[in-house]
Amino acid sequence: MNNEMKIRAAKLLHHRKKTLQKGDPVSPPLVTATTYHLPDIQEAPFLYGRNSTPTISTLESQLSMLENAPTVAFSSGMAAISAALFAVLKSGGKLILPSDGYYVTRRLAHEFLATFGVDVIEIPTLSFENADFTQVDVVYIETPSNPGLDLVDITAISQRAHDAGAKVIVDNTTMTAFLQRPLDLGADLVVCADTKAPGGHSDALLGHVSGYDNALMARVSDWRRLSGSVPGGLEAWLVHRGIDTLELRLSRMCDNAEVIAQRLANHPKTLNIRYPGLASDAAHQIATRQMDRFGFLIGLTLASEKSAEIFLSRCDMLSQATSFGSVHTSAERRARWGDEVDPGFVRLSIGIEPVEALWTAISDAL
Ligand SMILES: *Cc1c(COP(=O)(O)O)cnc(C)c1O
Image (tube, rainbow, N blue to C red):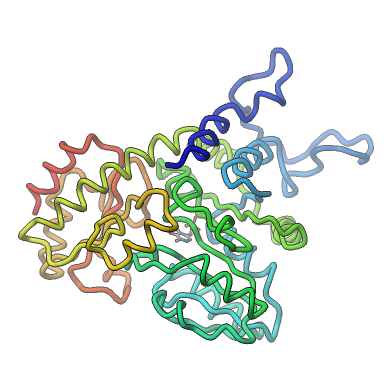
């Protein structure tokens, strides 16, 4: 991680200091109150729980520091993605999104945005590089794509999208701001499912939207209040706690993933490994340019559906779950959800286990 991000990680652990009065709790209180004492409404910091609460506001200060940009928190990653898309798109508008991207975002676009008159176009992540953005309103990027782990150059795409008058939204869930900062590379909005690595313990749904454009962020914030997609107090509190250790966890997860990807690549039972940190990976060049580290997701192809399922059930240190970014290493065969991948393709999300114990479990199962 670069030096600036190390300083940011350190500052994040002390972000509440300036707001504390003598006797205040050092860790943020969990406030679940929906109503606030309002003898009059002038300059009241909190009005009603759907607008915000002290716990949400504390989390947003922390997230704004992490992203180095104004940030609004939502009840889930999808709630954040909905806010970003509904904030920018209008009837008659045109949206380009990756056909190999997060499935739920694509369904939202086709089943709701399209019925409101938005032209929804899906193209593979690798085709963004040469796609025509004329008349496009939103270019929506996920890099690395999930689960295929293809990459696109955010700077180049943002430049071309802006030349065509389009806004750029990047789903940065697989990376987080510690590993990749789309706003610095030209994106207009970044969205993240904090349900994954930022929460980090598979026990809270939450998401956020960040951006420098005040008018856009005001729409994002209105969307939350009007649609009611505000995070719960407990979730905001859990994610705040999660982010205290995010840099530490990511650093172990990336260290582990680098070792495991290399060893898997040399293993006789594997047909193919995708990991942007491998010098042989098709995405390695772009990865070195725009990512601080190569992340914790590995694409592993085994001989068949059967060998993949046996591997998953045999390994004691893989939780068989969908989702990723938790402290526990987890894995699943993505074709079971209909992703267009090889039947033997497994997405591995590497956790924080000490690496030799983890590798022993993985290689024994292989
Ligand atoms: C999980 C995920 C989301 C959605 O997050 P939820 O909190 O489950 O709504 C969006 N984008 C990506 C890339 C994800 O992995």
